Amino acid sequence: MRTYRVAIVGTGGIAAVHADNLDRTDGRAQLVGACDVDQGRLDAFAEKHAIPGTYLTLGGLLAEARPDIVHLCTPPMFHIDQAMECLEAGVHVLSEKPPALSLADFDRLETAQAKGGAQFSCVFQHRFGDAAAAARQLIGGNEFGRPLVARCDTLWYRPDSYWDLPWRGTWNAEGGGPTMGHGIHQFDLLLHLLGPWEEVTAVAARQARATSTEDLSAAIVRFRNGAVATMINSLLSPRETSDIRIDCEFATVELSHLYGYSTDNWTITAAPGHEDQVAGAWNGVPLERGSGHSAQFLAMYDALDAALPLPAGSASARQTLELAAAVYASAFTGRAVRRGEIVPGHPFYGGMDGDGMGTHVLDATALNRPAVDAAV
Image (cartoon, rainbow, N blue to C red; front, side, top):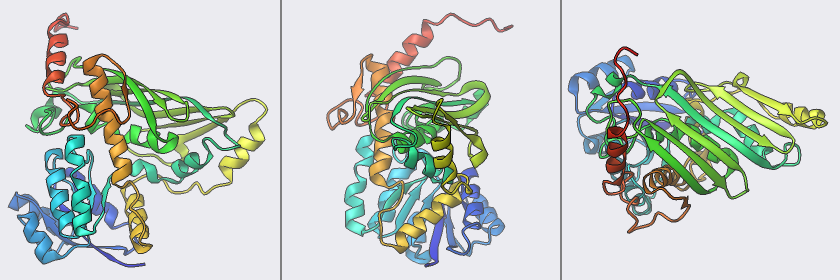
């Protein structure tokens, strides 16, 4: 069990979550460096978390701190180029979501990983709780049966002030709205539980918020195993919840939480006549650890110890990003999109806006929407 040298790039709010969770890895990680373009913010972060090395450039950090793993906690538009720089230097990358702003950018990682011999992983911490592992094992098996119907909802609330940061809510800096920046965690977990998706039909809208992108998307997703799921990603919902429900032949699996779950957030309901087999299966697996960054960090270290591919690595992260691209492509073209369809030359391969198509559609629908009375 090796101790890994870890550095954090970007010292904003999510970086504090990473630093705090690194402290919960039982000595498996040594935080050796931090990097930010803001010297004052960088120094305050390093002092708070007792980080010995501070750097204003990523190149300086890589050369002097010599980390084994870099955590990318910067705004989305920087993720891919910073990941490339780390990977080419032979340093493993754990990137906050989204992993890239387009499939075209994401596909650049393959060359960088091959060149440096390092691996890329994306922060999809909801995969790593014990209950998610148990559900993934049981869904489709003899005890729970084949998955048939599902829903996956990220119903969050963000006021107009949320978009005061200039990079938020723009296609060229954030890559999209709640589909890319918020709901991606929850539908990544849905894909983790149900496996590959095959086709999506979607809508996206700018209902109320001061953003260039959508503030709502809704989709119907068909999976390779035959299951059909509905999916909503919203920033308009005052009662915030994140929900997954999967109805199998013999059991319903439900998760309701916000930003992270414990085992208590999961509910398992057996079909009539199948109570004993369902309860026995669910209670027969470990159900202690909830989701969280530290759980993913530990899984990453275990994989590196064993010379195995990193969990939430590039292949599975790409499937999640491809679903996001397909939601946008379907919403803005008005037709179903199949997995594997968005390839070089497709308008949504190079960006989630589809060469301006999304902006045009959202602007047109927003202009045609009746004005809301200010008193309401």
